[in-house]
Length: 250
Figure 1: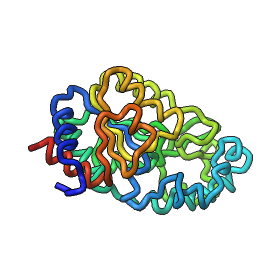
Figure 2 (figure 1 turned 90 degrees about the vertical axis):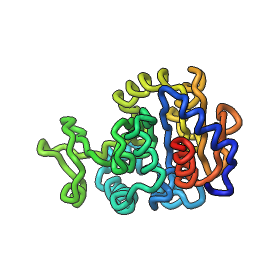
Figure 3 (figure 1 turned 90 degrees about the horizontal axis):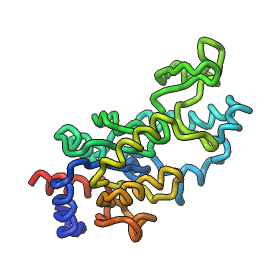
Figure 4 (figure 1 turned 30 degrees about the vertical axis):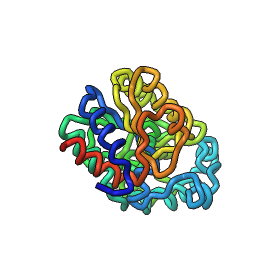
């Protein structure tokens, strides 16, 4: 066990999980930092280097070529080559054992799927697919398509990454899945998220209001820590989750 982690809190969290009937995880950018994917916000975040307005839906419609060049520089390099880290792998193992029932992620990086999780709601969409703005046809993302400026559908329409742009609604499928999962949740792991992105930030609070216990894993305190969190395990997600996995299976 890592000596910096509060052992009593870790055991308490593990006991909560062992007794849980429906454990879920709510993950954010912090879980993927150790895979080499930078967060959007903060000193070294993507928005300190790129103009976020270029990812507004209206800008994409107006100038898809400019938007696609930005998308390639941000997402189709480090994201495409990133591999799951130990935090992702622990969650995949917990799902395989039947302990973890569902993941709701704000991340578009597909790393939960790469790790082996199958019960995943990608609340902000995914880079795995492209969607035609004209006919709605969905394509799997390929290098061949990404080389185009911009990628186009067989109908001639422009393809857009199947992610939620600024000014775009959350996918109906994601909203439906969250509305089904949250009422069943009795323990929620909140991992690597500051709780600043609306409306995703409301999800842990909805679970808490429904009676769920919140176990938070973050490097620093978040908007949740002193409001809804029951147990705060401070540290890197990969380290804390590895120790938590051992305590659960002990």
